[in-house]
Amino acid sequence: MRKVLRYLLLTVMTLCFSLPCFSAVEAASVAILPLINNVEGGDAMANQVFYKEAINTLKFQRGFVMVENAKLTAAIEAANITDDVPNKAALAKIAKDGGVDIVFCMELDDLEYKNARRVGEVMYKLDLEGEAVAYNALTGAFYKHEFSSDKVVDAALTVRNSWKHEEFGRQVRKEIKKALNYKK
Image (cartoon, rainbow, N blue to C red):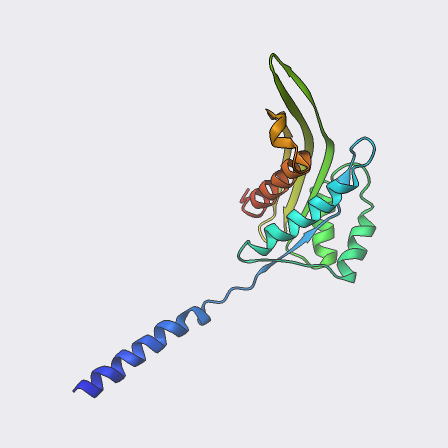
């Protein structure tokens, strides 16, 4: 009787361990379009921050995989994106021609910080403005969000790193997460 119970328990455990294999879902493919950088003077560091944060955010999102191939590059070049974010039709065309499920694009209009005058304190004020758009070909959802920030912090917090780029990176992560979870 004891052997029968062991075999039964072993069978149940084997089934429990193998059940997740049967529920595998194909990941949605995501295309990240180049940053539309309209910052005065052309902030090259913003482009690097954008790609770094976008790739890292997608890496830790379950069910999504970033795609980059010649077919997608040709579709992006054919869309001829210049100084403004593309509309829903342009993103849908990129998704169809590039063979991806989700297309994400971001525009950065302003990224700088200035002294914020306060009595007895040295403070900096961040000016961050832009727009993020995404199109989900699976659901037909079009995400569009204009973002801005006028955060004021103590100057001591901005000394060690590039504070404005850290804040921009945080905004990129936030917008990608919102766009991937947008339902309509």
